[in-house]
Image (cartoon, rainbow, N blue to C red; front, top):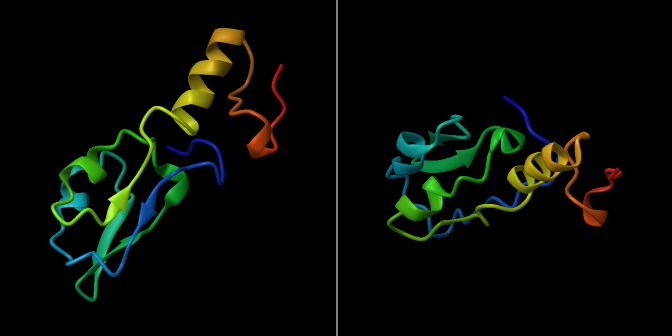
Length: 95
């Protein structure tokens, strides 16, 4: 499932990552993969910003602001009866 393009707050620090694979275990949308003993973000726009990866990363290599970005946009769109809208920063137009 894709949400909105280029609005996800997900960040991965390759310097902190040890390749433990916890992010691949807990991510419901398979946003991560392990390659050369490091995690990689494979599909940033598939992230729903649930925060499971950041909460479960034992090395604090992942950050994400749960409840903002795409999740917020989808909820805001539903409440207003229109398309997902994340606000002025994303370039989408809000109804």
